[in-house]
Amino acid sequence: MKVTAIALAVLIPIYIQTHSSLRSIDSSYVELAQTLRMGYGEFIRQVILPGALPGFFLGLRFAVTYAWLSLVVVEQVNATSGIGYMIDLARNYGQTDIIIVGLVVYALLGLASDGIVRFFQERSLSWRRTLAD
Image (tube, rainbow, N blue to C red; front, side):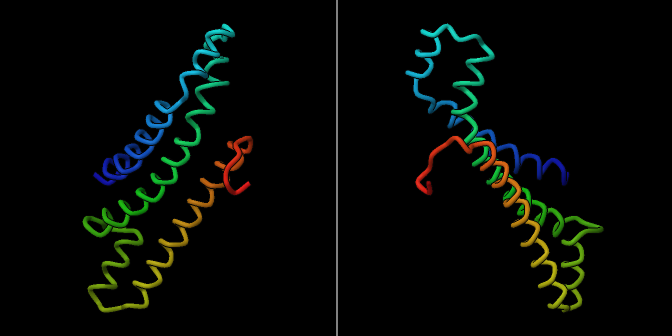
């Protein structure tokens, strides 16, 4: 059940964002690729991937967030080990310091995983100009 809940929480935002970015690829790029008689592999590499990667990484960042949120919920509901189980036991015994430590650990893990995704996003999309540039 845990894996299914987390997998659904992760796959849905990735699918939605990637699908949205694929649908928003300008049709003139597709026409240009057809005019230049690009092969299938070159079409994927030159048109589809540059159009889909920004949405994919946005969905991946959402997915990492939803993965941690769903992990917290699943561990609170039905767990026999883990940080959520530790927080639940601390709640039962009124140990607020352990609850705060558990929440800080979750926050640090979430920030670290988002930082990793951002790192790969910046490396993969270094060619893309944004408002920050």
